Every structure is written in C-alpha cells, then in structure tokens.
Image (cartoon, rainbow, N blue to C red; front, side, top):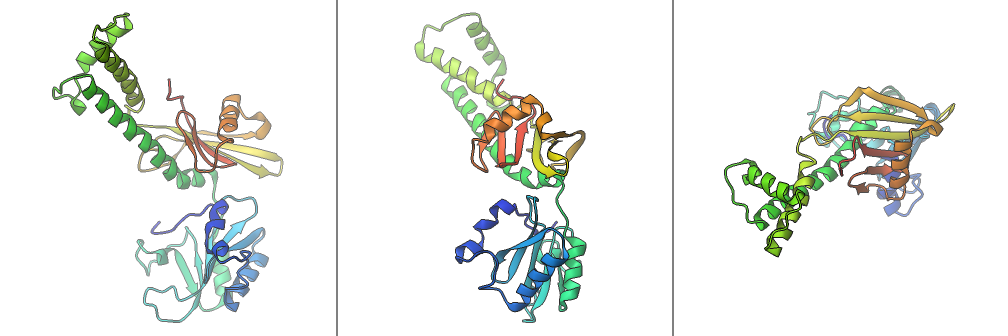
Length: 304
C-alpha cells in the first residue's frame, strides 16, 4: 500500500491544526479552493466531516468511525513540482500507477476540476471494517509484545550466566538437561547449601518460565471493537493468529459479534481492566488499549 499513513480520528488533534491554534476548520490557513473542496465534500458525502491536516490539506472523517477515510488537499503534490496546484484525494484504495508504490503519490488522485475531485473522493473513500482496523493498529501491539519477548530472553540469558551454567552448544548456549535436573531438585524440596547458588537457581526458574511463554514464537490475540449500531451498541471480536508475525490477517473462523450487554464475562473483565489505562498502553498478561472502544487481548493468559 505504498507510503499511505492510516490515521485514528482520536489522534488528529495532534496535527498542525492544534499547533496553529485554530479550531480545525482551516478557515484561517487554507486556500479558498480547499475551503470549497471541504464544504462540497461534507455536503455530498453523508456523515462526513473534515479536520485540518496541514496548511494545504484536511483529513476526511465520518461520524462514529474511528479511522479517517483519507485526506483531501489543494496544492502541488506532483513529484515534478511543476508549481501547478491541483485538487488531491489521498485514500488507501487508490493505486495511481503513474507513481511508484513507495511514494505517497501512489495513493493519490489529482484533478484540476473540483467536480472530478469530488467524484474521486466519493469513489475511493470508504469506511474501515473491524478486520481492517485490527490489521492497521496491530503494529503497535507487535512492537510492545516483541519488547516483552526481548526482555524475557535477555533476562533468561543473564540468569543462566548468573547460575554458573556453562554453554554446551545448545540453542542460546543453554544446557537444558542440567537445568531440568536442577529444577527437579528444587521442586522436590532441595535447598542448596550455597545460599547464592540457591537464589540464582530459583531466579533462573522464574526467568526460564517467563522466556518459555513465547517459546512457540506465535502470539495470538483477539481484537475487540465497540461501536454504535441501529439496534444498540455492538461489539465485534476478531482474532489474529500471530500478532508478532509479518502479516496480521484475521482468522475468519474466530469472528464474533455481540450486543454490548451480551459480551462474555471474560472479555468484559478485560475491558474493565484496560479501561483504566491510557490510550496506547500495554499491560503484559492482559493486552493493549488502542482507545476507549478498541482493545487487543491475549487469546490465553500468558502469565500461567
């Protein structure tokens, strides 16, 4: 999808509109052409509103939708920088083959006529599904979990070294046979006469357990999204087989939709826990909060 940047509506307040101290309407900074473009689009696309992106563009959002549909602009966005301003529509579904897919222009349609630009916007800007959002926001969860994995691995290696276990050619240099025998002794009630060694072995047991939680290399998560529907508040749940993998494709056999009041207790409990956190916060053993309506949860309790 080239260089297209997905945007949560809840994060748009961090853009230049707020930095400039204006009310996100763009009236103080945008050209008359862009003002007209924003006004036309808001009239012709039901439920659409716009928010300032920068001096020459505005995000296009929709009522009750968590993701911006894309953005529109008026200016010279051509790589040749000809100086000729045009109406621009940028959306994830656009594939402009005149430009490399590694450039933002690959996701743009440009027009000299506002009527054509409106058609481009209406034809390419669409809402994100729950599966779309699960894939888009998954990179933040992946980053958080990989950090936990790396930390667990490093602390395990330090504990092995601290226990005085020599390397023997095994994966990560660990002698698993020796560790197993030592752990069995501790489980049987043995206490090593050397206090420091006893403490090191027990620390190693804890660190190995933490590291082994991710030993399979796959971390499935459930993505939960709450949203308004004509029959009341609904909750969609979709599963990603491995949030730490390269592709975050949903598992269609693990998709569910509930009325909010019918949400299973285990999910309701996790939502209650994560609702006390700030947006973008990760809680090991529970999950990750995108915002007040969207969360990722471990499929299983990895702390056990």
